[in-house]
Image (cartoon, rainbow, N blue to C red; front, side, top):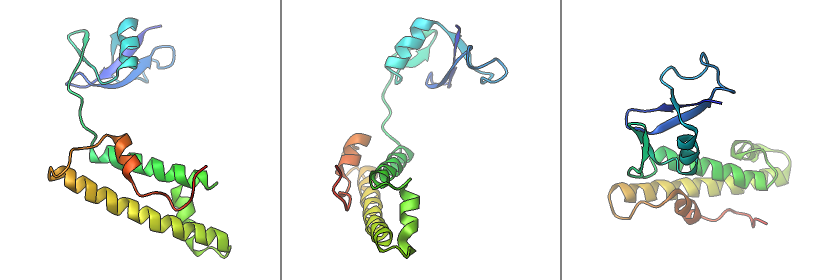
Length: 152
């Protein structure tokens, strides 16, 4: 098996394309073949960069606003699934339900979701203005307001 990698100008990985899964016509034209040892090392530490045929440690970029937003969206979906709803959007959609329990779940969830986003934007504003140190995604999620239900 040959491994191909799509790598940006700074040496950051965009994706791996093993030839047993990705035919030449389906993988990015800029993808280059890399040795299996490089591939295995990159899987273990994907923050490294590929420069002149070698993996090098590069500066770890802090999470972007999109990274935080995506993590919050996933967390909201997890909380909804913990209540046996498919995702956050579906749970919120029950706000006008004629079934009292569904409507109550939705209203509690919507109020909590709004508090989460208000908090998130406030915290990211404090990060931007350098009032606080930028947290990791994990620390940020742990600092969010608690869900309206006890999770088991």
